Length: 212
Image (cartoon, rainbow, N blue to C red; front, side, top):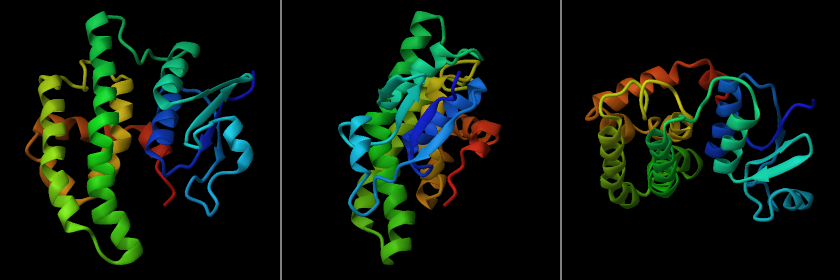
């Protein structure tokens, strides 16, 4: 059986989420480099894999798939290894709720609104948009409080075992906590800070760390 193929770049939050899922399942894979920020965009033939030109895309034994949520659920169900989706209906719903929260609220605020403005953009152009950062800080605080409330003191985001929710959130938090504002905000949420310490120390996180 051929290795699964992940198409994308290691800097991408969503490519990393797919890779984290494969790593946690113990599945070997190949990362095929696709840089959506390259001059001219991704290669023209990549649109056959992802008609919207985004990353990641995925292939397993000729089966092609795009959209991160669909990919990680497929990986969990198609391969042997630890189950990353709970059997319990309500806990499984909580996993999906947190994934949706990450996509709809946390990613645009914590990555683009804070990390990019405070860390990535100044490295390129020498300044940050302070107004945009200030606008996004209370939104980030709302995200952290909502996650803490849902955790209810659990070891992982949805209970006593790691799930897709943890992996989906981890890729976002790794960037968010590079910003001093992110590190300051998480101090108000000790349960979440403890979760991050456990998550950041996992081998899967080390194995998928972006090169730059």
